[in-house]
Length: 92
Image (tube, rainbow, N blue to C red; front, side, top):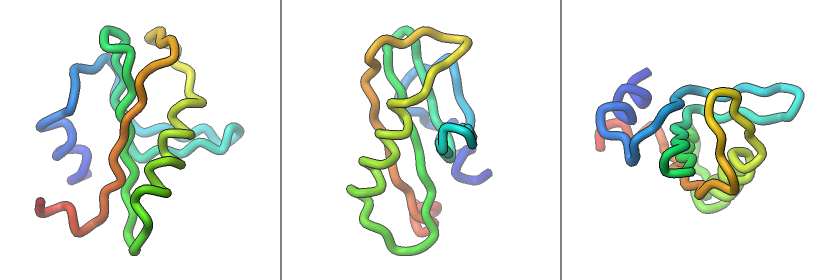
């Protein structure tokens, strides 16, 4: 919850859709994302507890976000960005 509040207090973009994504059949789980039809953009977030290679995790996250479809907005080949955060980032 703390990360979500932090994300929404200073989002990196204007957005129409915000929230977590859990699609078990498609094996897509994203901690939180923002999506904008106006900007044709998705910005996704992953939270990790242990030490991870953030670049590898970011590539996985972007791959998952690229497979998403939305009912409420239309995106066509959106720009996809993301952040992999660690629990240590909570104070930053």
